[in-house]
Image (cartoon, rainbow, N blue to C red):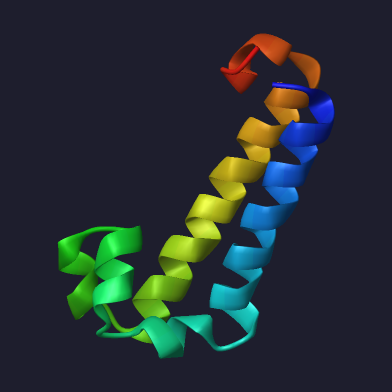
Amino acid sequence: MSLNTWIGLFLLTSLFWAWLLFLGGARWLEGSWLIAFIVDFSAMEWTADGIRLFAMLMWILETIWFVIGLFVPEVRFWP
């Protein structure tokens, strides 16, 4: 995967995590079948705070993976 694609994908997913954390996305998805599609079927029972916690942890892990991918192109998976 090219560096520009890597950065673009990170920006897109960061927008999604930011929507969940800061813009009311977690409340909107709370109890919805969409959260089950995005995360897992058990996530339908999560509260908005639980969804926000998941989003925060995923964003942190994704940021670490992004930084690693900046310096080690092999972890980007696509040629």
